[in-house]
Amino acid sequence: MTTELKQKKAALELRARVMGMTRDFFGSRGYLEVETPLRVRVPALEDHIDAEPSGDHWLRTSPELHMKRMLCAGYERIFQIGPCFRRGERGERHLPEYTMLEWYRVGADSADLIPETLELLTSVAEVTGKTVFDGVDISATPRVLTVREAFQEWAGWDPVASFDADRFDLDLVEKVEPRIGMESGPVILKEFPVARAALARLRPEDLRVADRWELYLGGVELANAYTELTDSTEQRERFLRCAEGRMTRGQEVYPLDEAFLDALHRGMPACAGIALGMDRLLMRLLGTSDIRDVVAFADG
Amino acid sequence: MYTTSDLRKGLKIEIEGQPFVITEFQFVKPGKGQALYRCKLKNILTGSTLDRTYRSTEKIGKPDLMQKDMTYSYPDGDHFVFMDDATFEQVTVDVDVIGDLKYFLIEEMPCQVLFFNDIPIDVELPVFVEKEIMETEPGVRGDTATNVNKPAKIDNGYEIQVPLFINQGDLVRIDTRTGEYADRVNKR
Image (tube, chains in turn purple, yellow):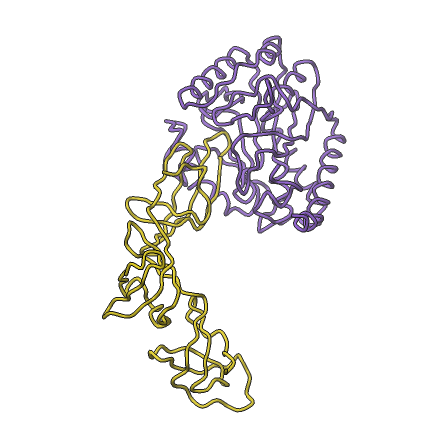
């Protein structure tokens, strides 16, 4: 174990430099670094994300709801780097505790975050002196395609016309992501079906899809961006639908985050936000397929 | 039955009455989607491979597999007789199950026999067996090159490639996993 930890020195040094460069990147763009609670009264309601209990609280699965309360309070550009916790998630690309980078920008929509995210990637990749990692050039112009296009091309059906949650997940993993993995640059999958809108606004010109995109590098999902939903009534309805779905599937149902809904009700400016898995970014920079290689202690 | 949280590389599972071993395993979770468990599987009986993705709610069959310590006794036509070290019961294993390992069986050899639903499906021999070279071209004195080989036959006619310095009557060790020459046993 000690030897293993010793062998990680170069990776952990790179990790520290990447974290520093990320902070510099946002600092130079007028973003304020914020810290929101790790231990929260209510975890965000998501279809398939389970929270780890912590006494009479939970450990956060994402900093999203607290950061949005800051947006409601007038903070216009904020970012945070910190741990998130998800129960039962462990694998080559998953740890139950991992490091998320999340940032929000008032006045932007999700499309505005694409160039900013790609600039962040090329900027932090400078620590390695390379831009190509395992055949993927992160400085290349991304291939942008809609979820509908990707599924029609590689899975042979249109999930926007009629959505099938189970088939969607399976085909995404078995058919779409492997094809995305063959691209030699970043891939952006955008306009997710409304059933997978999560906390994203629906596209005004087509309410069947959400203003949400995912960034892939080498077939691995790296970041998830939204033009944020600002309508508190719609947000409440989505939470309730989600709670209902969780109940039906026998998952734990968390209460609604009324403090967040209240802030949203009083007004959140139009904005876009994005979450990026720092461990996965480091995996790419270090050329490893195992997330445990980029953290000092992977077993808690 | 297994649940998806039991899945891992090396686990043996049962699908439609066939035993499989997981050769590759990955936990995946597409953004905002359900947890999925991707497996590459190898059929233990036929060796054929299969990709399977399980959802977290699925149950997976547990095969009735048992590995027993046994001792090889004697050949009997197209069969080989083993004795269970614990019960002294005799078990007959078909030549199809043993395959080329039949060339390396030696009486009283300790083996491990894998049973699926009480039927022997695989035999594991010790990693190395010692066999005498019955037939090979004479060795070249002083030639200890190990990268040049020549054919040689062991007692039952099985042919292996051995270095030039090996002579008829030499005792060699064979790796039963590969069926290849490993090294020469010093003469007693």
